[in-house]
Amino acid sequence: MTGVGSSAVLRAPLVVEFPFTRSLGAVQSAFLTGLRERTLLGVRAGDGRVLVPPVEYDPVTAEEIRDLVEVGAIGTVTTWAWNHEPRRGQPLGAPFAWVLVRLDGADTALLHALDVPGPDAVRTGMRVRVRWAGERVGAITDIACFEPADGDAPVRAAVPHSGVFDEPVTGIVAAARLDYTYSPGRAQTAYITALSERRTVGERCPSCRKVYVPPRGACPTCGVATAERVEVGPRGTVTTYCVVNIKAKNLDIDVPYVYAHIALDGADLALHARIAGIPYDQVRMGLRVEPVWTEGGRHPDHYRPTGEPDADYDTYKELV
Image 1 (cartoon, rainbow, N blue to C red):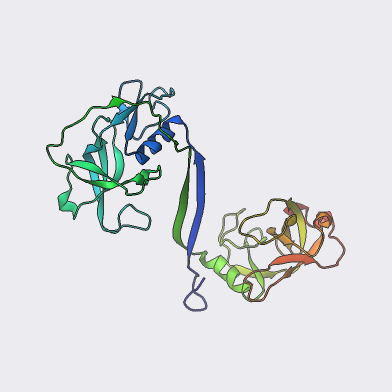
Image 2: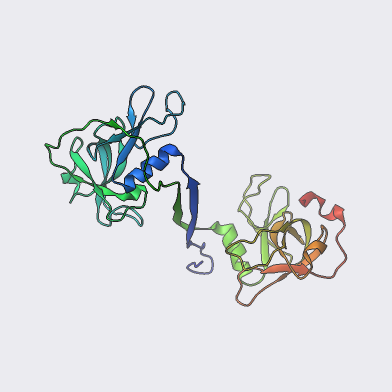
């Protein structure tokens, strides 16, 4: 994180991403496999309406529905919005229109992109057709986008479909990603700045006089703003802990290891950190610990025993 000037509040770009894996039921499997085969499927609800994209349960009765039908690759724009600045991962790199398209034979609309040169080239009621992706894998992106269709393209009705295909798609992996700018605020900026100097600071509540680490800018108990900074630690006491037996993909730490809540001396809120320098099965409540820093580290790498006698339970019982 970087800030302008010594008192500036920190800001930094942050990316949160993970792959989301899910299995598919019969209806969604048929829909996505159909896209791979250039076949558009919907499902007929109990009231006779054809729903595209298909759903597995009737939105009115909540009954399971599997009456699949094939609809047309041409449809009608029911509403639209212009996207003047496409973002990463969107269907088209140049400006395009987001459109709701009611495909021929369907009673609901499908959201996708329409490739047109500008907002003047799109209107509600215009006829559009699917532009298929060159390589299809069984995903909504098998529809590359929509494009304008001939005005005299005939309207086709929905026809029954078995939903049976060779090598059906049974699961999908969707990459979820969130890009944003994070600011920790005034209180945590001071906390992070102090950590860079290998110090730990909290803030004292002017009402209850408790010291909170990390500080949040307000007392979580009294709800009043905090401003008085207090340096705590560096030593502390293990209040409670857990043994981790499952290795995280992004951490180069052998299992088992211990993660603990540590009440730093002078603090009224325990923070969590890894315990090392002691066999995992010898970690205990009341263990006195101190931080271990690595070269260039912005926070303690772990905590290790100080060799002091264990703290009396009464000294930390309110923080368990």
